[in-house]
Amino acid sequence: MAFPAGFGWGAATSAYQVEGGWDMDGKGPSVWDTFTHQGGERVFKNQTGDVACGSYTLWEEDLKCIKQLGLTHYRFSLSWSRLLPDGTTGFINQKGVNYYNKIIDDLLTNGVTPIVTLYHFDLPQALEDQGGWLSESIIETFDQYARLCFSTFGDRVKQWITMNEPNVLSLLAYDLGFFPPGVPHLGTGGYQAAHNMIKAHARSWHSYDSLFRKEQKGMVSISLLAGWPEPADPSSLSDQEAAKRAIAFHLDFFAKPIFGDGDYPEVVKSQVASVSKKQGDPSSRLPEFTEEEKRTIKGTADFFAVQYYTSRLVKHREDTKGERGILQDVELEFLTDPSWKSMDWVHVVPWGLRKLLKYIMDTYNNPVIYITENGFPQSDPASLDDTQRWECFRQTFQELCKAIQVDKVNVKVYCAWSLLDNFEWTQGYNSRFGLFHVDFEDPARPRVPYSSAKEYAKVIRNNGLDGH
Ligand code: BGC
Image (cartoon, rainbow, N blue to C red; front, side, top):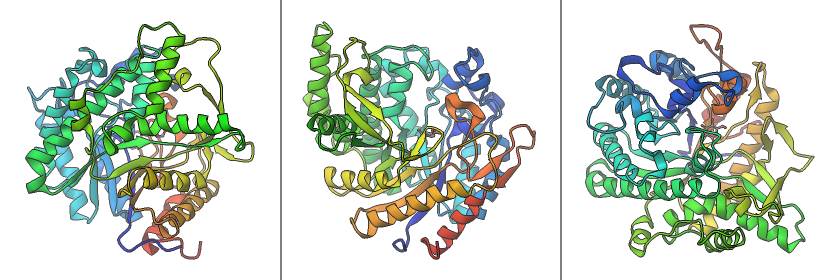
C-alpha cells in the first residue's frame, strides 16, 4: 500500500469555519455573519462563527498542528470580506492582506505548499445585497477580486481554487434556501446562481492565464463535490438511468462545461426542459450558454479538484406531486444500503471514491486530480480515541491506493477535511470533522490531536499504509 513518490498529503480548512474575528481589524460582514446573527434556529443552537477556532489570532497554533502532522500541503480559504470589506477592490483592507501573507510565508518556510481557495461559501454581505450570485454583475466583481489575489499572493501561491463546491452552494443557498441568503427559489435560483458561478470561474481563469501564468507559473481549478451514485437495483434499467442523472446533475453540471465541451450535459438539458414543460413553465428553467460563452468556459481548469464524502443508492422516481426544485428535476430518490456504516450523515463507502475517480479519469480525459476534501464527522462530544474514524480513513486510503496503482488514476494530492474541528455550517459545532479536537468552551481554543491525527502522521511519514 505504497503511494507514488512525491504524493501530496494535506488537510483543509475554510475561512468562516475556523477564523473567527468576524469584525476584527476592518473585516466586512459576510453572508454567514448576517445569517448566523439573525438566529431563527437555521443553525444548530443558533451558533455562529464569530470566534470559531480563533484562527485569525491563533494562526501559530494551527501551524503547530500542520507541522505535527507533517503535511506537505495545507488548503485554506481567503475571507473575501476580510480582504475587501464591501466585496469590491474600491478599498483593500491591508490587515487582511498581512494576515494571509503571514500564513503563506510561514507555510513556505516550513516546506508546506499552500492550496488557496478564493471563495468558500462566505460571500461579502455587500455583494449579496446587490443580488449575490443571482445577479450577473457578480461575474466582473469576482474577477476583480481574483485578480487582486493573484497579484498579491501569486508570487508564492501556485495552486489556486477559485470556488469551493459551487454545485453544493448553488443548491443549498439559492435553490433550497438552507444556506444564506436563506431564501428559496425552487427550480430557478440554483440554476441561475450556478450559471453565473461557472462564468465567473471561467473569467478568472482567463485572467490568470493571460495576466499571471507566464510569470507565476501556477495552476487554477475549482473544487467540486461528488458522491458516488450506485443504482439501487443494478438490474433495473430505470435505476441505472437514474444513477447517470444523479452524477450528471451533481458533478457533470459543472465539470462538463469546464473540463469538457463548454456546455451542460445533454441529459440535464433534456430533463429540465421536460420537467419544466410538465409543470407548465413556458420554457426550460435551465439557462443556456451562448456559443461564445461555451468557447470561453471550455478548458478553464488546470487540474481536477474533487471532494468526496459519501455515496448513495439511487432509485428512479417521477415527481408526482409537481413540486419545483433541482432535486425534483432529477426524478430520483436516494437510499442507503443498511450494511453501510454511518458517521452522522456520511455513509462510509470507501469503494465509492475509487469508482468516482475512475469515472473522472474516463470522462474527462485522464486529468491530474487533487482530492481537496475527504473526511468523517463525529458528533459532539467526540472521544479523542477515534479508532472507528481512523478505520474509515484507512479503508479510504486503501481504495485510493488501488485507484492509483491498479486503475492508474492520476491523483497527486489528498487533503483530509479538516485540520481542526470547526463551524460545520448549519450543524454548528455539533459535527466534528477535525484531526485536532478544539474545545469551543475554552477561550484559548486548545487544539488536541485525535488518535487519527497520529495515525495520519504515520501515513504521511511512510507515504503509505505500511504495517496498517
Ligand atoms: C464543505 C466543507 C464542509 C464539509 C463537511 C464540504 O461540503 O466544503 O466546508 O465543512 O463538506 O460537511
